[in-house]
Image (cartoon, rainbow, N blue to C red; front, side):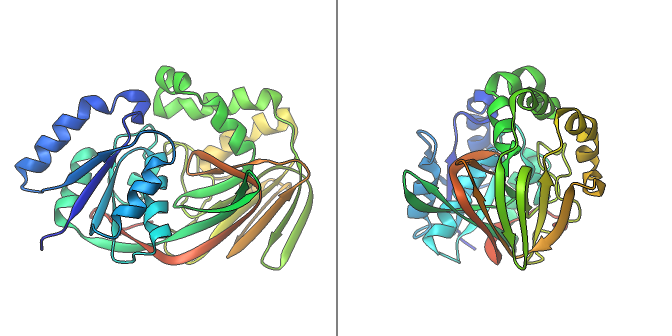
Amino acid sequence: MNRRTLLIANPAAAVGRMARRWASLLADLEARNLKADHAVTQGPGHAISLAREASRSYDVIAAVGGDGTVNEVASGILLAGEAKTALAIIPFGTGNDAAQLLGLRSLEDAIRALVLGTTRTIDAIEIRCHEAGAELTRYALLYAAVGFAGELLKCTTPTVKWLFGPRYCYSVGFFRALIGFVSPTMQVRCDDREFRGRMFLVSAGNAEVVGAGTMRLSPGAKVDDGKLNVNVVEDLGRLETARWFPKVLKGLHTTHPKVRYFQAKSLTIECEALMDVQMDGELFGHTPATFQVRPGALRVIAGDDRIE
């Protein structure tokens, strides 16, 4: 089958190391007789507009980069409303959690999957939040969160990623962020539940593992079950948070008495002070925000392994 394919590449992926791999990728695809057009992003948000426009003309759009690039390309496809267009991933980023989720554990896996073109459908998280007084819509594949997750991301700088690598950079960012973070007051509504008070973190998970495969934030989450796995974490204090951090790595944090963990189809978060929204490792917009599952919203090109 002759599929029109577009590669959308982020030159800043993996702290700028992607450029060294780009020529090799194009040569490999040509050797396998896979013809693809390509475009390079010029800054944050550019991949969304590129993918949104390209969805009218291409059967497959491949995000070449990390989870942030995947998030933008997926958002562009979904905002275009073109159900026929499939998302592919070439994992050139720091975390590559979305690629791992789809059974793409190496560059070779990703190229082979792109050549074979086997597709599946997965859920997406529709995120409605605000920026400069306007309501905006975006989509996430892995998770969306308000609270400490945004501060952690700010403290996991490109320098931290470069020095500590994907295995340890988010742990370093965690403890850097913990020093100055103050839990905001939130009102959270999830289906028929409501929570009020100072909250350390509220997250909606579509996938089990985040943070370059290091944090089991949403244990048991399935990307194709039509549900979100929700964490509502009350203020713990710095020492208690630090003590429980190792349990997040194993997905055992849900046993803490100040953690509420359950499934829902949507949740709305309001804060006394505006708080950043974090999605798939990127900051976008601020509260008030609504996260809602969109079952089977996106076609993806997956590896041989079953999607968990």
